[in-house]
Image (cartoon, rainbow, N blue to C red; front, side, top):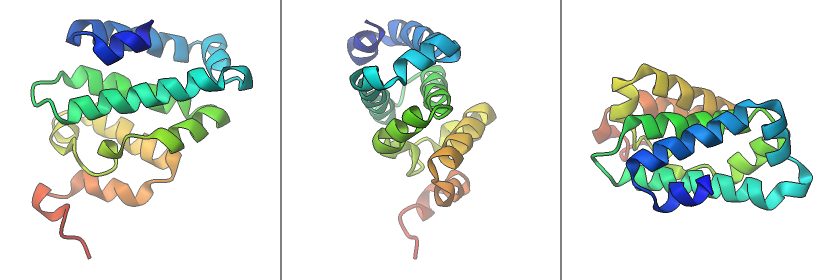
Amino acid sequence: MSQVVLEIGNELSKVVGMHIIESILKDSTGISCICSSSNTCLLYRLTRTLDHLISLLAFDPEFSPRLLFHAVRCYVLLCSRARGLNAVRKNLSRHLLCGTFQNETEEFPIIKSLVEQLLLFVGGTEDLRLLSLPDDTLFHQP
């Protein structure tokens, strides 16, 4: 149900939905259930939902950084399990890799820290440098 709210709800309901999902992922039983081999569809749907949410945030200049924080935190929590890490690697939003949220990572160091941690988990260490590049250099790399 929280996944549906994240896809079609308003900002407040999305924040509440993210809190619920994050609470489930923080609980050892919850993350074990989501990352179990019997719940592969649930795991991949969750990562696709997070990708969809991140994509929406990338195109909404008025979005709440709180949503970005919780979405990235959910990705990081999923990376604590092998199946979760694999799902995140396959469905990680490209917007987290290309510097789309550079302003937010500069304004909110906790978000920058979480994105850096996430990129280290998924092996995107080359993408860490994008977090500190000015916008005009992002598309002019050798």
